[in-house]
Image 1 (cartoon, rainbow, N blue to C red):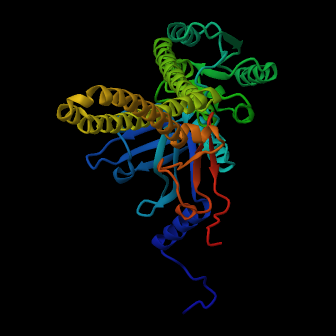
Image 2 (cartoon, rainbow, N blue to C red):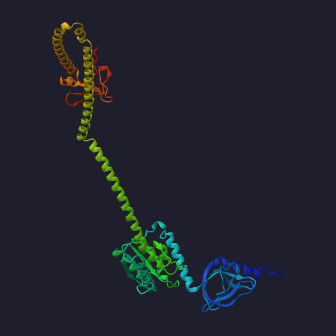
Image 3 (cartoon, rainbow, N blue to C red):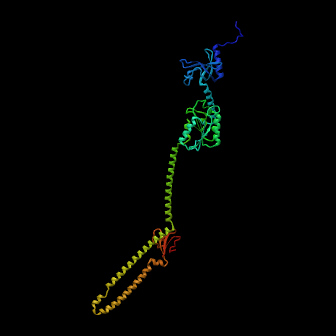
Length: 451
């Protein structure tokens, strides 16, 4: 007979499936810390082990497709951090942890703290490039924040002395490892900022494990670096090591020696550059002096050419030229008059009374006397004519005309003598030759005889 009050039953498979859903949906993914035991490596490549602590244990499965790297280093007794989800193996009803990632327990915790702080500070913009300050090309003083007894500071000082020994260095001592290190590093950095005696600061230490470098992952130290008005170079650990200080610093150097090379220029290269600049300046100065000297010579010549003395000299040259032309014209005129006088004399000889003397010997004496008288009269007349001609010549001489207050007027541009007022127009330049000197004038008005 059927018992109507009996509870509804489910199968074992259904029960395990419900438990599996509750475990996977209720807990989600999480980190579990424990020690590996009973590790097995079947041919499938999956890993199975027990994860235990002092009082409990849980089975774990690390499937091959989830493995991101070699797992040969895993062995029983390893203290690890396991990331995954809790599930149930339905076939056997075994509750287990499905592993997605395994890390060594110590570094794993620090790594998560490191990633969380890095993400936080990045979101606040402390790593942004526009916050970075440039490193001076030639710092007046370099500050080093580190342990004064470490190998890093000795390497840095060696490189600085080799590259540019003239740059002074100030060491701000601080612990670089241990619980007290973050506070000492912050204090040293604040001291350097307060004293404001350096142009750039180097925060450095040698290599080590994540725990050894942990002081440089301190949040307060990162914020102090970010707030520093002095550029900060970070060189912590080896090339593969990255700390929060590296990200927030203005410059991250892969090694402390590399940081020293970044901060101090090469002395030899600097000297070569200075010598090259000095030579360029000297050449430029020499060229400038030569250009100025040439300009001065040119201006001096212009000044001399435009001086009153030069103008007077040019006017004197022109006056001498005019005098020469006038003298030549006068000589030519006198020569022409002499030739004419000689012609008259020749004509006089042709009408001589010698023929008459030959026809009348009896009248020779009379004719001779008359001829003498006539000759003297003729000579006197010729002398008189010559004097008259000379006076006429003097009367028509340009120089005599000038002495009477007249002037010889010529076109100033062509030198042609001006005879009519209409040969020029208003605004033309003319030249008037006087008895003494000359005048240059500009036509203001033209008056024609018809006007």
